[in-house]
Image (cartoon, rainbow, N blue to C red; front, side):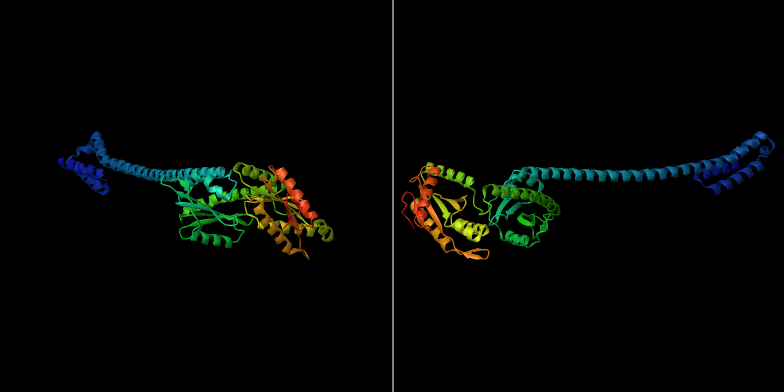
Length: 425
């Protein structure tokens, strides 16, 4: 009996260990030992049933173990799949976080770009654009310096911002650097059809041309080669180009409002208003100034002989001669017809006399090409000085007109000072 128990114990252990062949061998050995040494198992039904149970137990254990292992492997596969799904979800979450951060950054940049547009909307000169938006630009562009060169004037005008210790942009007074002059040459050489859409790196400096209707208005320059900064610089340059176009349109409308279309001189109303301001200033500060009324001699005869187009060309050329030979502070405008108004600022009429004589001589010796005609033209000038000949603009114009009529009566092509109708030069 002890041998049978040993064989059955070995069978159970093999079953628990998953060793099916060993369990089968020990089960057979257990059966043979039980039958040989205890024939009672074959004679009694209950004893035989016990024997069957003893023999079936190891098989049931092996079957249960197989089911357990199968379930375990299925659960492991499910766990691995869930783990994989969780990792994918975590990756998606990280990607979503990065996308949200990128969107927040883009929104912040768009907000600053909008702020730049808003802040520059009130600028009336190209040179004012950077100054109006320096707070927003300091956040948008992590660069040490930012410059805008205005090319709409006769000479380039630069506006420059530099980053201060508090990380904000402040104005910096400086002349154009050699590198900036080189960039201007490159910008002028670029095709005019190109828009300000891409920043161009140039040895540690990036620049973008500002175009409007195929005309180069300016250049935006930043000290950077960072790819992100280049993209932002292009976006800002595009906004500044739009504002530059608006400023250009404003300047053109303003010029049309105060400029005579034929001669390019100031219109009568505007130049007289300016003259009133200058006379009031001269009165406050005890200064002198002189009014010159200029009229083209025998102009109606040229109009009748050669036609109005030739007459317009003569008017335009005489206006240019007068304007070119005055100081920038002096005023000149078209008074009406072929008559011009001049105000020599801070100039006594004694000093104004040689100036008027020189203007008369320059017009007289100048040959005017009007279509197929080569003509000459003379002018007569009447003068009145403030405050000796009048205290108001109206009085000065009246007295200068009287002097002009005196010059006409005296034979034209001369300068006369009021009130002496015979004074000439």
